[in-house]
Length: 204
Ligand SMILES: C[S@@+](CC[C@H](N)C(=O)[O-])C[C@H]1O[C@@H](n2cnc3c(N)ncnc32)[C@H](O)[C@@H]1O
Image 1: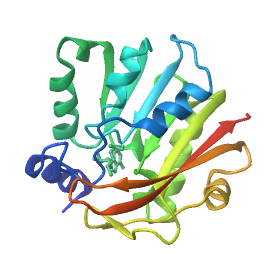
Image 2: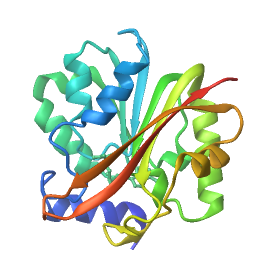
Image 3: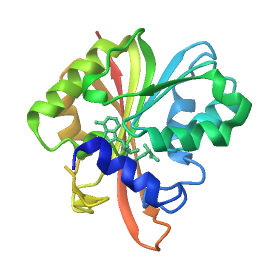
Image 4: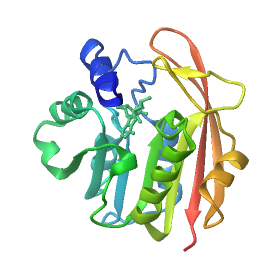
């Protein structure tokens, strides 16, 4: 099964609040976005957004340039439906992030639980090329991943676990570590997942 079919099938068989990564409100992501004091006109992208409500909160906070990207059309359809009329305010991108061709630079790149699925070094290299082509000088990158020692799989797929040091080494020296947060995520099925959220700033 290819990746797109894998993710589309998950979103076909489960509603957004049944998937293990579901959050009613992405509190830590919102806190980290707030911490960097963006302007309402700044460009933000949520890569591998799934059916996350992050975009709902960011729209409500007045951000006007939001891109929501995912590999699964089913996931994006949930968010479009949930947002109703407000869906037209979002730039929706049905794409594999490792193949994405950005049409502008972003001030904030948000990735919760996507980069950690990239098991092969070649895929991570492609992701980093897209990131480098997408991020504005002085822009911020937040990547949330399973913590070292935590879960080794998500939705049946292997993941790479990260801490700040390992992620910094992956991203390269143009990305400077800013801060980190840790979360014990409660899945809808009642399990716990240890997440780390890592914020970097692009110096180039
Ligand atoms: C674990 S879910 C996290 C969803 C969302 N970020 C959240 O925190 O609720 C991973 C998401 O990444 C998407 N995804 C996986 N690989 C991807 C890729 N290469 N490009 C774009 N999206 C991808 C999946 O479709 C899925 O929606």
